[in-house]
Length: 392
Image 1 (cartoon, rainbow, N blue to C red):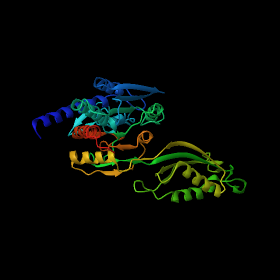
Image 2 (image 1 turned 90 degrees about the vertical axis):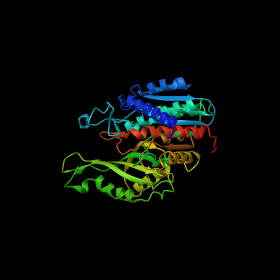
Image 3 (image 1 turned 60 degrees about the vertical axis):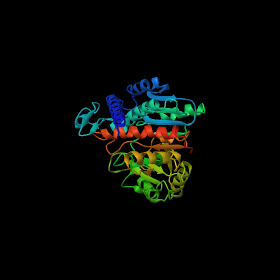
Image 4 (image 1 turned 120 degrees about the vertical axis):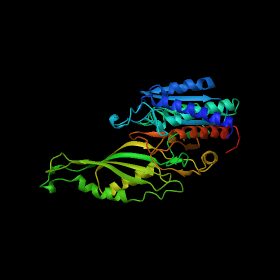
């Protein structure tokens, strides 16, 4: 590494660490943005970004775009963090970023304020090197990713769709890495479908079961059948769909009363081999076939999304290999992400970010060295996608 390259790397490292610390210091527990997006917008505006803020029901969203031409490369993420849990169990204040033995500690360090800082510094570096690059760059941020996700990224996507503003490539900064930065790229996520099943019975005295109908007994067979069902076989990218019961409640609390109803909370994590409609139909068929009197309240839904091997996956893989020496694997594991919303207006979406081992935990942390590496990865991907001119 020559002197100039070393100087650039040192500058990127200093800038990314400083911005990460500034973001972590803001107590942006979902849905409070705590000024994070304003801080970022003030960094982007001098670079020629047009910044739009969309505030809905206490949620803050930012759409910042530089340029009007295609292709449009979007960097997406969230400024909100989960609650800290018992603050006295942390080694230090969760919102007072602390460095120790090569790690940066603080709530949101890995999920995902480190990625946001790397986004911003990568953009600044890219624009300084390629001020007249073709195409456009955008940054999409929300403070509603860790919450119900109803007034966040999905609302921005709806606005963009309404004005026919499509995205060509999107990099979501979620903590996708498993053991080492860049070892995993998420190129999709399973869908989620949640509901509460209420099985109706007849309440009565437990000593006179012939005068009652026990909904626990009535539902037991159906629950066993649903849990054992092979919903689909998955595919090359997704494991088979699963159905899981998460909570069951029935009874008055008395030992001698047969309950009149049973509530079962459940969730599907489903592959692209199934649809919401097919899962609903098959579940209800089981319940009808068993003669149950029931009702279902559907409480949450997120579509699956998938980006097969293509231009964006190839660019991400090549850049990671060149910078880290690792050959990343593709994965669709884990929970949902806002990538599912962006996929409605973007055919190629990947999630690429820090190691996620400490996210949502006490003493969340990220390697300081990974901050500059991540910045270099993002900046190089921008160059490959916008300057190199390689067509999908």
